[in-house]
Image (cartoon, rainbow over all chains, first blue to last red; front, side, top):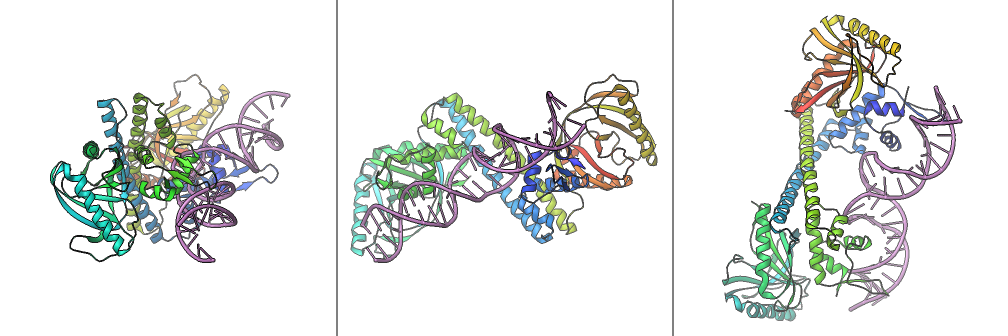
Amino acid sequence: MLKIGYFAWIGRVSVKTLHYYEDIGLFRPAQVDPFTGYRYYTLDQLAELNRIIALKDLGLSLEQIGQLLAGDVSPAELRGMLRLRQAQLREQVADHTAELARVEARLKQLDVEDQMPEYDVALKVVEPMLVASRRVIIPQNDQVPAVLGSAFDEINAYLSRQGARLVGPCLARWHSSPEVYENEDVEAIYPIDRPLPETDRIKVYELPAEDVAAVVHRGAFAEFANSHAALLQWMAANGYRLNGAYREVYHRSQPADDSVTEVQFPVART
Amino acid sequence: MLKIGYFAWIGRVSVKTLHYYEDIGLFRPAQVDPFTGYRYYTLDQLAELNRIIALKDLGLSLEQIGQLLAGDVSPAELRGMLRLRQAQLREQVADHTAELARVEARLKQLDVEDQMPEYDVALKVVEPMLVASRRVIIPQNDQVPAVLGSAFDEINAYLSRQGARLVGPCLARWHSSPEVYENEDVEAIYPIDRPLPETDRIKVYELPAEDVAAVVHRGAFAEFANSHAALLQWMAANGYRLNGAYREVYHRSQPADDSVTEVQFPVART
DNA sequence: TTGCTCCTCACGTCACGTGAGGTGGC
DNA sequence: TTGCTCCTCACGTCACGTGAGGTGGC
């Protein structure tokens, strides 16, 4: 009969761990003194403790281990548990590797600039949404506010006639590359609540979900180039590439206004 | 002024997250209605929320992010935080990769045997300990119990004369490879509480800490070969190799008794 | 008698998620 | 009026660690 301190020592676990395992009914001392409450373990129990530790090393939860020890798990179920754990571990390794790339990119940036960065790039998932869209070509960059503005007005008027409701801020999807400033190909888009008939100028469809890298841009319409540059730099440093048309979400009534815009670049791993 | 639900939606966080950030003083709504308690946010705050999310993507804790936003972190300190996080991530990737190997080894074993394994191998760290040791060569395998037994008796007698105390179970360290059964080279060892003078037969020194793979063996002295085989198989499957003399810890008075033994193979990554 | 080991609560961890039960706004 | 959104507690998560305050054993 071994006292808890010694048994914990040879089993290389803490006394508190043994207390806890008893609390949750996973592993009980062979005997408990009814007067002092002292717990006593036998050497035979060392093998069982070792078993628990070995299963914990596989990443199983204490609850799963309890079921295993109670014998109500078939080999097929154990295989299922391990397959699940395998998938989790693979995902975690991938996630942590990506996070490591982000951290290292930021460290490199700190070395170069030695200051806090101006833009904060965050990875997000945008949800799918039903939209009404008007696609236009804009010959010169300085015409963007006017042309986009009238495209939004046109959709807006159509939605009012149809009695549709807006369910979020308007946005633009740029089909030209971010470096191009002539004949830009862009969709003016409103998210809507239900399907509508299309016209030859206004299309209605579901924008799919996308992984995006996003920055929030404050200030004048003409200064998006800085946000674009920050995003492209971040993507290069973190091993992502642009994966389709990028979005600008205008958190206000009209893109010509001077306010808050979120720039979202869809990304895929290179 | 945006209500919490809409602000959470465009920021792609949950309402509960915004509640929580307010609770811990990280991120407060621009305004709170004193009668209804309704929280109101401005579009400007979207940039700040994005900043928090970007920093969270680097793996910083919310407390660290709070310090960063409050501006009482220098670039050097930020670099320190990121270096720390980098080290943590590298360790986690290594740990998870090793765990993945264990899980996959177990899955493979399940495919072959389709049953619960007889031995449970656990990775542990053994602490350094001060020991008294008597090293002997044993010509034939069947002499092991007798020769080891008298070696233990000899140390025991010496320790009694010196008035030293035992501080754990006795053990043997096998310097011969586990497959060798002739002229085995082995140390009989007692852990002791304080340094003693050495003799030409009994050495006193500190056994260093080691990473070991361990199984608990129950039953007769002659059946250790099974434990050894299980350990060697596990090590091969998980990418470890034997790294020095292996230990048998006898959780009883004499190794000749029939009881519980822990076999510990020191390991290193291949 | 003095340490040492052991005991039982109770609370903390990290970043929220999940209800319960109730009120405000259109 | 009916839903919908919002509010404030309170508790749960996972596997223990960290005291506080007290008792048993040699």
